[in-house]
Image (cartoon, rainbow, N blue to C red; front, top):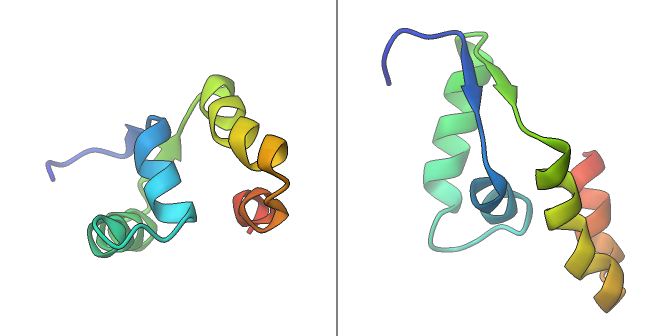
Length: 70
């Protein structure tokens, strides 16, 4: 990463992290840990929140909905 203090995250990386994707989880954990450690602000859009929540709500997978609040 370069020297910055704010990063925009789109829907896919958030889904990978919240749903514990085996393929991407390690990378996402490293990324989020570095952001916390270096006080890098993570921003996203309300569209990302809606995109993430549509499928879990429609499938009744409340554990994934609850992941978003954690």
